[in-house]
Image 1 (tube, rainbow, N blue to C red):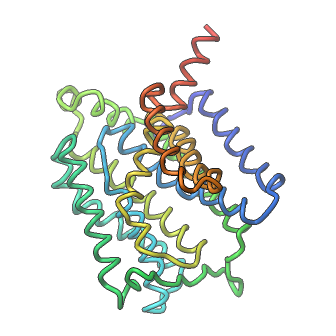
Image 2 (cartoon, one colour):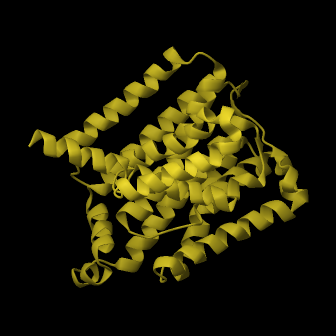
Length: 316
């Protein structure tokens, strides 16, 4: 990723994101609101990773929650069962996800379209079965406690602390995704998105590039899963559920697969909507489903790319 400059529009978007992060604590009326926004930033980290796989390499995955769960459960199991320091568990959780992605990515990335989606879904379901069935290790359906992250003699359990940690990690991941998009690697991935045959004819190692994108996406998901486990102090198999994978996919599609900032907008929308609609619990799923459906009909490229195109046309 040498000699890469972010376009001015994305630099401004990055600055706006940082400004929003700084301003939220000043306007948050309670710790609960701060915690919900921290959850938005954490899920956005995973969504940005999936955006790299989908929006750059053009590979559809329904197994993203599997890597999210690996990061969460390794972070929980190693300190609780085997006495590892939590920070070491986070690193090992990310490395475990990278290794698993590399191992399964080689065979399944030969598939395309819905065949690839079903194969990745099978992986996620397998991780979910382990999380549910191995009760002695994972706590089973009841879940398990997670030891807090420690810095010296201090336990990092405060909502405000995790808010700022999630901000820092999301900014870093967004910067990496944006720089990657405009690097030679990103251009090779986007060539694959356009046409694998054409990309291969121009000398792109298609299999290798797709595997790189798959491993990067898994890394982001595992990191997000680890942060969620540490912030909540408790995890259940819900973190590797089928619906979690669907939500990650919907976040990228609604926000816009062409941009890391689109993934963040999608994560914010789908994470905040259940909180906003809490008073209308009986109709919550129907409203969320309607929003997703309307977005796909009228904003087919996603919210951020559509708005960016609109304002670009207005300036012209």
